[in-house]
Length: 267
Ligand SMILES: [Zn+2]
Image (cartoon, rainbow, N blue to C red; front, top):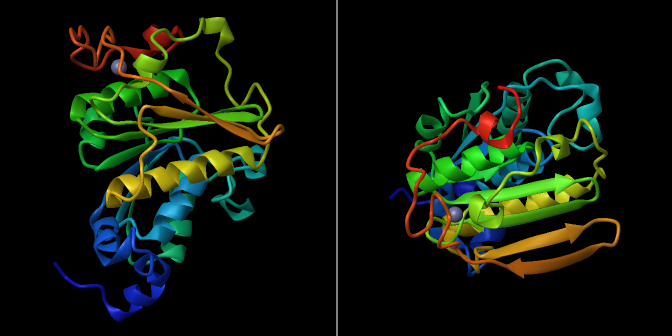
């Protein structure tokens, strides 16, 4: 294994000084491959911190373009990137921050056709999406591939974050049924408190760094719930649901399904 060079020793000096990360942890980060699905509110801070931390290969997947209304909270984007593909704008920002990394800009919707091939190429998956359809898809795909999934979601002034590690529960264990179709709202329909995704997305980055390096206690079997207005954090524990259709004792789901139909939205 190649040792860190002088510039890397300077760039990552504050990690090298941390006993819990150290040189071995930093080398793991540099060798790691992390996929961030959704380069919006949650993906922005997650991508910035993971690039700063030295994650060697960062995949960015998103089909959307930068809109003016994104800039209230999607801090990786700027006015210069208006109407350009989010993954291209974000990839440029990450390369400016840390040119030694490999950034893969994947301009696509992650769906049941491409999810397994895409996720298979990475070590850790970070959910930065904003739909139930994508959350069930990523959870199932990560479980089928045996990959850890860092889950985060936000709604108005509240957010939550947890880590789904295969064998320790999945999104379906937490939410066996999707909400009724009429109840599904996205950030387009409701407000989002500007700094909230910064808090949740940054926690997603922290959990990813811990998964890669083995430092600390991962947020496994625990959901951290946050309310930005009350400024409270609380934790709920959960276990793998033995009746879960995918990760339970007698699974009935062995492949990806039609998630649009599952959550009741048009394809
Ligand atoms: Zn499950």
